[in-house]
Amino acid sequence: MVTLDASHPVSPGFKSAVGDAIDAFLVGQRSKLSAIGPEVSTLVDRGAAFTAGGKRLRPAFCAWGWAAAAGSLHLPDAVVAAAASLDVLHVSALIHDDVMDASEARRGVPAAHRQFEADHREASGRGDAEAFGRAGAILLGDLLLVWSAEMLDNAGLDSDALARVRPWVQAVRTEVTAGQYLDVLAQSVDPYARTRTPAGVAELETLVSRVVTYKSACYTVERPLHIGGAIAGASDAQQATFSAFGRPLGRAFQYRDDLLGVFGDEALTGKDSGEDLREGKLTLVVVRTFAGASDAAARRFADLFGRPDLSADDIETAKTIIVDSGAQAFVEQAIEREFAAAISALDHAPWLGAASDGLANLARAAVRRTF
Image (cartoon, rainbow, N blue to C red; front, side, top):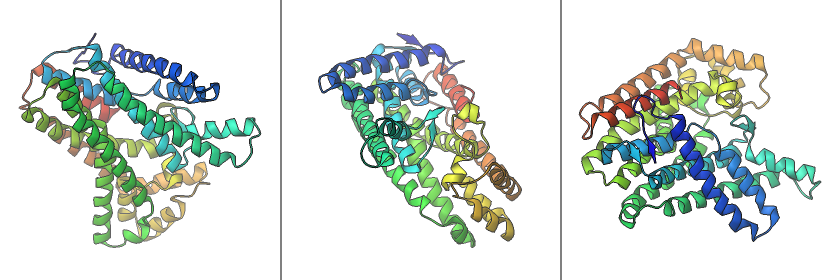
């Protein structure tokens, strides 16, 4: 059993418990796969490696959702395991996301598809190494998705709790997949052409907001809260408060992530700070840069945006344009606005004060990245 601490809502003890639950589950999966053959042990090895780290943010929101609805800070092992299954789901999404974005790294190591690609090259395999790498990563992501469902089902929850939680889990799986498709669709849009008019800017901001809501806000904060609450038998009023708190907080979290994707410290984020620019990732930062830059600066930014061969100097030029356009300040203001909306939802929350304190501190950690 783990005891939550409102002053330290993602404590080392909680992270360790989540990691232990995932490790124990993967030990069982390794045993099952060994009957298939030694070759597939790579899938378990890579699954274990990519689920070993991370902020444990989604399990934390699930745990605090349970605590708020249950009126207790003492997490049963079954709740820890159920919460941990959300990190297995998360890593599945990350691996697929890296394939779609052709990312080079994840959490400070080569992305899964690059590791499978390296396997192919080292074995002097027949065919295209990059295609093999993509196929291996897609299958690993699929396997982790399946395992996340299995881990939840086998977490030790009673049948009533499982019945309550399933609609919320089904919702998050559908929403994050649909949100991912919206993200893919957004990347096909020419942001320079679309931001030449106020109407075009508004359309792109709406599209980005939908991506952020369903790919990140629901998936990262709102639904984990709902899942934890459902396990504990949350009331409709409690679940409604989770939405009022979780959705704006999730948007603030993603907007912070988008800024870090350009201005972040690679040593802290585990990703090259220029990667989002090289990938041409359409975010609120990018939309506001095109909208706020001078015509000459917007054209220069369009020349740089989405070029995989950007040099360090090119990235610095792009950052200067972003700052001068007012986009960085605009997004910082959006983060503060969404964060304030989330915190205000806790003012009259229908649960004990300790849970509100924990959720408020967790919200601050998520937006300030102080884990």
